[in-house]
Length: 146
Image 1: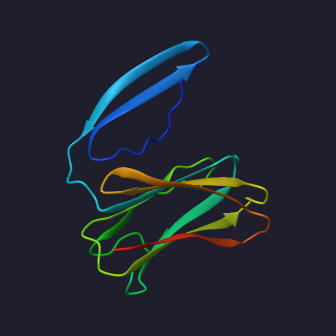
Image 2: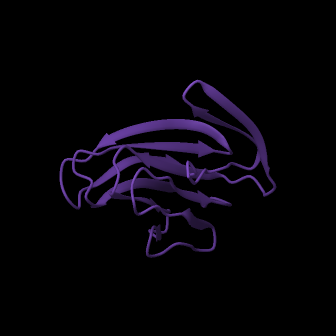
Image 3: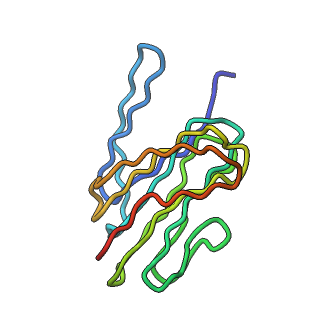
């Protein structure tokens, strides 16, 4: 049929989305009406049929991830289990202390390269790339102190 669907992670406010098909480019502005968040991490990866998971651990050692999707101030709102991503966790009203961002090769991700985008106050702060070499491997991406 020529159709497809994909998930797109949006930040608060105006988002510019670009779709490129061959030489054709379609651009669309999309506004997300919600309060800005203090911290957001978005994960993508480069393999199909793989499940790479995103984790954020807060200063009180609570971890937000696929089997614990929300707390009072953290939420996993996009969870992809079939390849490429995205996965997304956002934090509202950060607590004082350190947040740790990690990724895990949950299944079929050996050799996969993952990219993690970290946003602070809705602005891109960092982009990290990691490569998984083993099954079940967890990699600490970075720590952020508030």
